[in-house]
Image (cartoon, rainbow, N blue to C red; front, side, top):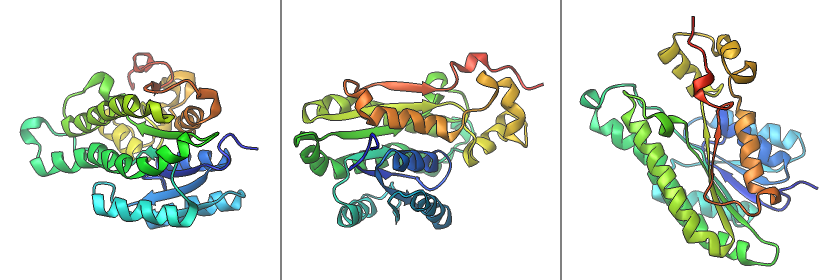
Amino acid sequence: MGALDGRVALVTGGGRGIGSGISLALASAGATVAVNYHRDAETAQQTVAEIIAAGGAAKAFQASVADFDEDGAMVEAVAKEFGPIDLLVNNAGIASRGRSVADTDPVEMERVVRVHAFGPHYLSKLVLPAMRARATAPGGRGDIVFISSVATDYYSPNGAPYNMGKAAAEALAKGLAKEEVSYGIHVNIVAPGLVVSEMGRRLAKATMGVDDIGDLDAKFPFGRVCRPEDVADAVVFLCSPASGYLTGQRITVDGGGHQWVRPVS
C-alpha cells in the first residue's frame, strides 16, 4: 500500500527536471499522475512511460498554465480520464533573462509572472470545487503544493521577473492555506535552491561560470547539488498522512542553507 493510493495528482511542468522527479515520486507512492507539459511532449511521454513501466498510472496532458481556458480544458480532461484531482503541484516555471529592471522588456516581465503566479491561481481555482468535495468526504484529503525557490530568500539583482513571480506564488499559497483549511485541504510550499535540471544547468553556467553542474558537487552541502528527487521527497511528505497537521508551511530544500556553499574556484 502506498501513502498516496487512490489519489489523483496533476503536476504542472511534470515532464522534465523537478517536475518529472515529482511525477515519478507521486506515482511511486501510489498516486495516479496527470503529467502536464506546454511544448515538450517528448519528455512528458518519457516520464509517463517510466511511470507505467514501474506499474503506475499516468498520462500526459498539454496546456499552457498561463492560459485559463487551456487550464480549464486540461482539468476537465484529467477528471474525465482519472477522476477529480485531489492533489495539485504547481511546479511549471520559466527563467527570466538575467537583466536589470531598467533593461527588462515589460513583455518578459508579464510572461514570467503569468507562468509563476497567474497559472497557479487559475489552476487552484479550477480544481478546488471537486477537491473540496473529495477532501470533506470520509477519509478524504486535498493537497496543493507550490514549488517556489530560495530566490524569495535573497531577491538577487537582475532577476526581478522571476523574483516577483515566485513571491506572488508564495503569497497566493499562504492565503489559500487559510481559505481552504476548513475543507480539509492542505496548501504548502517547497522552495529548492540550485537543482540539477535544465534550468539549473543554465543558471550554474550563467552565475557560476561552470559548464558541468556536477563540478559544483564538492562545494555544496552533503557533497552534491540538490537533485529533483530531493524536492520530490518533500512534496510526497507534504501530501502524505505523515503531514496530516501541516498547512501553510514552506520547506526549503537547499541542503541547510546557501551560506554553506563555497565560492567556485
